[in-house]
Length: 306
Picture 1 (tube, rainbow, N blue to C red):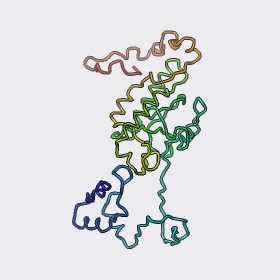
Picture 2: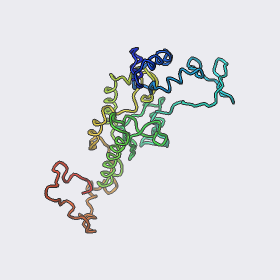
Picture 3: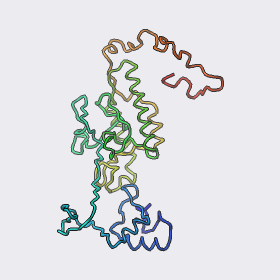
Picture 4: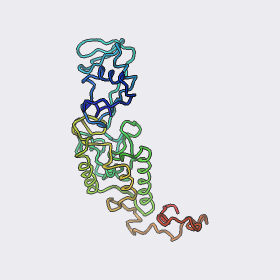
């Protein structure tokens, strides 16, 4: 990769390896633009033919030793008082990667997650259960997401299994959430949320998993809670397949359940009359029958909608 290549002083190219390209890299890539962090800690620009040519252009000035003080009708004025005339200004100021809810999210004890998880709050970072739920926040779920998506910035942290695609991670979370909702709706419960103890244990696993990883190096990145050596926020403490396996079935012992009024009288009140809607409408009452040779013994009778 570009970062690791320059960190070792070697030239590993994404462009065709020719003497011309190697010469251009050596000529244009001064120490000013060489990354000082390990690969994957920050976004990387690969040295393609076009940006090599752009860096070498007489029209290009690379300025990183002085800040911008203001914009004018003609360009930008830096802190040294110099005005640099430009045709177009493209800003890249970053995005919020704090994973804080964009809407009021108030817990059972009155805690507001946007304040509780804020960097200056009691916790200081998003502390989640499996990256999907939070303690003392009843019936609140969030699928996997990325912090730069404005519509999903309320997504929980540490929910993205590395090595798994974003759509697949979202589908896995949605399936997990659906299982929890079905249990609450189908077994006489009013509310559910993860226990503080289970959340603390998951939080400890996150810290231990990343403590010897490159992502915790002294660098700034959108993966993390802050600058330098700060807590990784985006990733699940393991691979994509690891997350898929762990979240396949909810650990019901990790949750706090609240029953409905009827459920408080008798936990099996949801048994009802002893008959099902399927029997009442007469549809698919023999759905469990299979053709000879089509039965999968590993999954038979396990589907929730059979």
